[in-house]
Image (cartoon, rainbow, N blue to C red; front, side, top):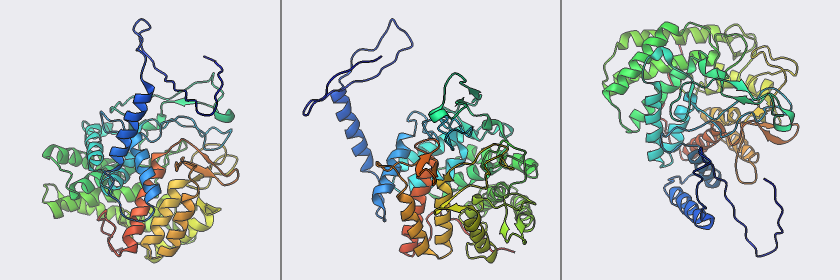
Length: 445
């Protein structure tokens, strides 16, 4: 539909777009002015529940409003982004459909929402998470539809030119069938956090978690496609192994701290075995860092999460060295890439072309600095990151330092979740509080 009309000072035009599956039963006209008033009242009322008295209130509140807007009310599921195929590199092929709910967002979502007074949304997400992972643990997926749908078959709309010529345009996401071992740790960590926050638990929920652990115990030695959902060969990614440790660690703590039943001696043995393997096989003394996968010479920004999940303190010499190497190898204009992606073909993911800096990784760097006692540096970097939001405070998945613009799907839940949690961590450090996710760092052997 095309039309032209003049607009002059003092005049107001409103219109709405509606849709019906039946052309014989079209919806009636709407009172758009009344709808706007109702919508504004809803959002102002919702925002009043936000309980956050730390620094950076404006970006934190904007991020929480964005996360709420990305949540599907009837199920409580939060999509990673409301868009598909906005490119990670303009004109490139790194174009993905993010209109689904990723289990990987579980811990960050619970922490961000519950720590800022959004308890209803946190509980709704926990309920969605429990429903999604129920059933046969062997069928666990890394992502689901907003109602828990399992079939996210990927296909390409080849007749569409793509955003600024970035093709293909993808519908669905084939990564939902990948083996990504880190999601077991994310689910166990999120449900452990919910238990400690008093969001409630049931015997059925614990039985689901035990079933997931039994499945992980039979799979954890296998190579997988990891946090970044690479479309290259499966490998033994360091982050996947760290999150495997998290899964068994949270199970042990559920028994020790909360008295839940389970084979704690066996879980403790597996946890310690995984830890020893990571400390010996993921550490590369020639690089001076925990590398991307066993035997690799490349670093990965995901290793910055090791202190946050309690695997190693940020002050451990190996962790401090890893942080330095990530800074040296992956930082451009103060922003971090996920991993090295040459302009031809990335060795790890098998895809051509580079990409922008991954904004969540830069927030993880803020967290690692703060946990390592470098609070002033962390604060400076955090404030610089806030400057990359657009004029209404929204962040995409990535930022391209060369073109100085946001790239990737938009707005991105992962970026806003990381922003909120970094702000909370900086606030806690400023006031001398322990980070309120209550994760305990285990002493390295």
